[in-house]
Length: 344
Image (tube, rainbow, N blue to C red; front, side, top):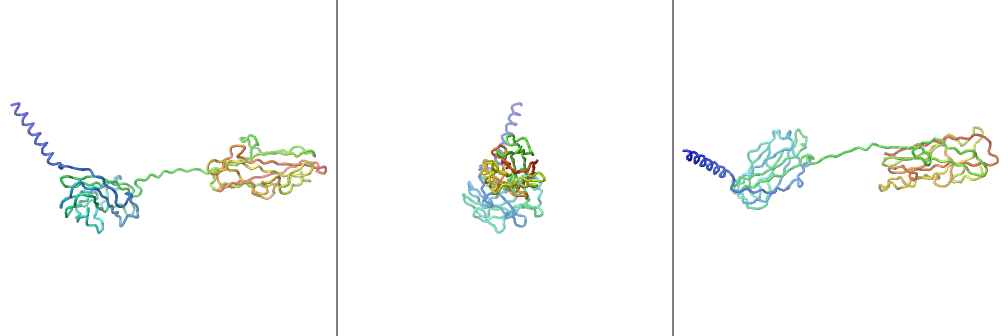
């Protein structure tokens, strides 16, 4: 009795297994699908007509598709919001063939369409075309969909291909850089120390007195910057002045004269990215000593980002004064003002 029950169960299992085997295709082959149109699988507004994009893709069949063979095309959207579309897939406009043979379309839904061969297609490379809804109220979807195929013949072919709609395969990476601008008048040796005084000291007929400071500029302005200079008056005591030197004329010992010399930064300009370009000193300040102008006047400039972090990349300003026997006694002073204008 126990043996009979065991034999009955074994017989039932064998029968069930045989049924499953019968239901499976005798043979199935995966095929590689390739783009025809759009050539790169990317769908933008230029590929859309009346809310649809026509996609053509192909593969090489592993056996002939006899008359009546169905190709089930299934679309799966990456964005689940898109799959709710009520617009069905459709045949491509004016396309009535696939793999070079006549076909008919049926079973259209939002996700599937069936292409049936009306004549036998020989083994080889071929294409199919499907019209896919890719817009909602005139707005192009942003997402991807896979188009999979499965043929109904005994030796079924199957495969899938991905399409990208509205930049669905793109990632926009962005960042922002804030504009930077630093201008400081600093000590000639300690660039971290700001200074706003330049002491020429007690003048004598046996020497030229001088005092120094630096102009420090850093900016990421794409077109660089300009620095202007101006003064409130000549170097004076209220009732007397020290004569200004001429254009590009050196202040000389024993001759009354006052002016300044500009030694432009020799590097700091971005150039090719190494920040080794020099600053530009405007004429006539690029030659010898000159009068400190009273009206705003261009002094130094550069036409790209600039990085002033060292004595080489800062501009040295040197004020000079000398007296002669007729220079009046007194306390002389002058207020010099600089202004920077960036070009972002």
